[in-house]
Length: 347
Image 1 (cartoon, rainbow, N blue to C red):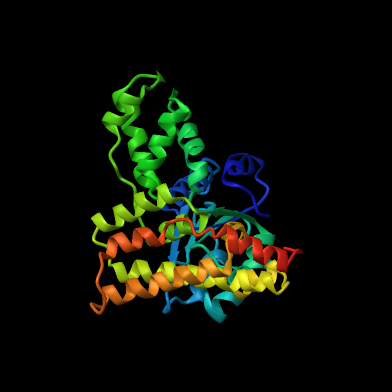
Image 2: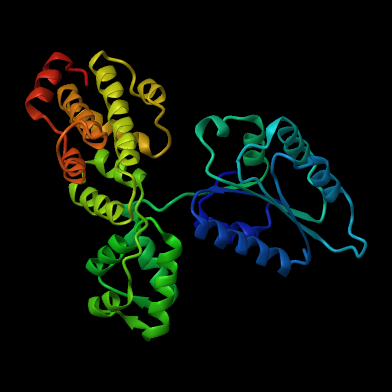
């Protein structure tokens, strides 16, 4: 059964299963969720712990043997299985399915996986884990949800601040929840319970945002010029290779072109997203972006990208970072979009 992280505490109290699976790309959330399960296990007598980290040389029979062998002292077991690649392989898939079919008594098992793509989630071993026990997705906090997440963190330590200050915090801490957690701890050490002023927060919190090209791409697709500018500046300061940035943005633009042209020809949005290899929560922002722009505007962006590529290679003149900034300006071509809408009224 799939649940949200907020439901984990109550689920543990209900003791409804002995199998848990965590999957995600956010180290802080994974660590905190793991600590919750381990604390619960220790409190309920699961004092013997075995840790298995799966790599290409891992022997799955070791795991099955550990699960089936009773402790010499009769202790309950906590089995911690980590699969960093997210791909157990043929032998591992069979071992996972076999384990789920006959859960051993007096044993709690925790499988930890990275974020699994749509194809992986459709595999038999993954579906078996999800249906047999409790599955908790632990993904990065979206930018628009980050202020509320920070507010909840402050509330845990009996502190609060204004919405404007929370937005300030989100701007500084975006993309690095572990750093955000550390900054929250600073605030509780330096200030008493109650309201925190903007000045107090600003004096403590460092600019620890972890900028990356995928967040830049999300800002491009969502048309958020201010955020795009901020992240691009951060990438420039960190010395990120312009070619890496350009390659990522160009791929996003090509995906949008695929979707926009498909919409023009009346194709199903779901099929277009599949064709463009857009998964999960990104599907909504891509479809929204494709609907608000035109093929003409997107092709113009592609030409801009080609020009930047020539600048990077030294065969054209221009400032690379200024051109990358211009590439991120909203690509809404309303005049051409109106023409396309009249030609394809069903969209």
